Length: 301
Image 1 (spheres, rainbow, N blue to C red):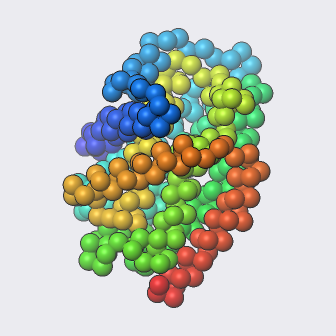
Image 2 (cartoon, helix red, strand yellow):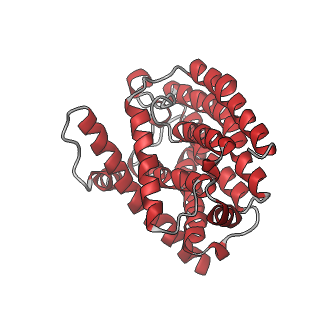
């Protein structure tokens, strides 16, 4: 019962509210960059409310159970990650050995749910979006794991509390040469995990009319929307705890806002890549850079 309350707060509820605010900041700054006014403060929450009062439509030739369960599982997985990270910020004693690995695997589940849900819809455009999402995951995950290897090598631990404790005593991991390279690699991979420009290839509204989400409507689309809001909080917080911790201070909010600004700047200063360009970029660009950061970390740099 206590675990259930933790998942609700600070897991789901706090992260959803913070994610909605972060989404508003993103949309507001994007609008200002494009010389528009932008949405009102509560617009992200209005969008979710509108979806939850609409009817759910199930494609006729879809795999009904997979189609309906995918957004629910995606939301559940990100809620568990939010709970783990939130409890670590409040009290590192709540952490457990290997929670870093657990978080990495759970952060992959929303992307897998997008692939499964789109594939189950039976729509050719959704299947194309699922294919793009699958290729994107296979390309950025390798680079992402190499970047996470650096803090593990420096601390000899796969426990988030140990990583934050090490940085409290020795300075941030991002302050070292290997750490800053790995942090940059992780930030770019985060942009792909969030499906933000230039890596919004699976959705690509101007090309495939929403792609993976084209058949989703009502509360099911709302679950995916909430998951996206929460990812905008959870992923940056995860990277900050690993590379730039600890986060249990007012300075942690400033660190998050800086990372959010980086996400927005990347989103508004780059064109969308083609899927083959993205794969080559991650495999032949970021992955070797991640390997270099691992070598530097082994050498103590």
